[in-house]
Length: 308
Length: 261
Picture 1 (spheres, rainbow over the protein chains, first blue to last red):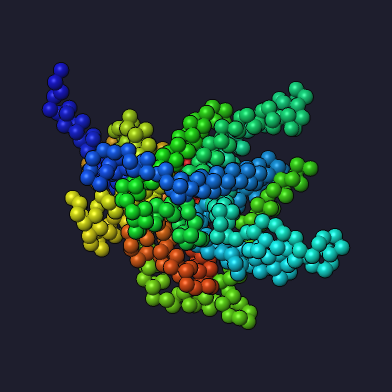
Picture 2: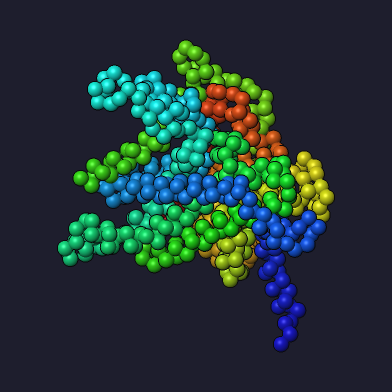
């Protein structure tokens, strides 16, 4: 049956209402992303090719991805654990209820305090001339950059004159992980607190009635329920760290070879010497963050089955 | 036992967050050799480039907020009213900026809108500014859309619209004088968060070569010692201020709602 003019006019006006949104999203989000994806499979003349994607197999590029993945993984893992511990302490650990709201508010601030200023804060604290670095050196004889502890006299009966430990500088992957934790932990606290609040008191009581110890309750009831949430958060934190550019650049400059910094340098000055290789590099980043986000969304849907 | 462990976890975590803040505050006050002073702040604030870039970023934030409101509010309203079947699609699109890293989006802009393209936005300063504002709107889209959509959930969109229509209101009046005032709290929350994101943003501004606050901070970090810490304190205060305003708006809204009942 052909639609009457009136009805099709109405359908048209219905779509007119969302037209500005789709025009905006197409121009400034979808098309640019699509351009990169398509560009990754094009050669200089515009023909189809797999060379760019295969070209990513250079050791320096693979290494950049690998270091990025390591930094994101460790900052996500530690962020998850520490954030979980802090949220659990406040929600389940019997701390005063009045601590909860300030912790959440502070987490909101800290999770948004990323980028250049965050790098400055860590340089001022544990950089070469930072507060903690200087204090450790002058008061305790610990020289972080050299990895040497000049043991003070009072302890010489116990330890040799010099103790060596792994060197630490803020301009390293360890330093990067330490800095990223400042926005990773709060993000974890913000996402996991509702899940912890969703653990019903009845479950704990039911477990106790059946003779379970606290450890058994955690191992057999609480953790299985929380596991999808925890793994999902881990994926989200991973993606969060993987796409971070500003903090890394302000902290280490172009020195550190991680994927976002390499892409930044490529966009500024074609350091790879092949524009289309840059597209492939960007495509790789999209794929990694998309995979992490897909894991997050899938697991969140699973966790919502129990935690309502 | 549990409680002692809980306190330990909380305090150790808190220490991790307090130390960098103390470090940056202490460093920002240490410009003079003898004792603390506000010299670093005076030096930063007097810098002409600071004032210029800060003003630029504030203007960017305001344009971003205005664009975000114009894009998001009518769309979220229309989807609730007439096209609920489109909701999953729109939600998916608004979440994409969390999936595609900002650096990739701006990379696309640079190549798609370069001087030789069909829409040569990067050819002029005004065009590049526009592109940056649109990029920021994209970055803020997930937060803005979710805030407004949650706000719309608390009001009866259909009834309000019908009531306004029967009084002879057009779409502009409905949106501007009926819907917007009702979701103002949500819009403000989204706006403050947008402000916090935009004011110190680095990647997009640097790659589009705009004189924004983020790239200025990064440059200053390379050739000064104490001023960067002063900037970090200022940036932290701004972030804190934005989050405080969001909390205030949310609380006021709740009061108004319960008061009205």
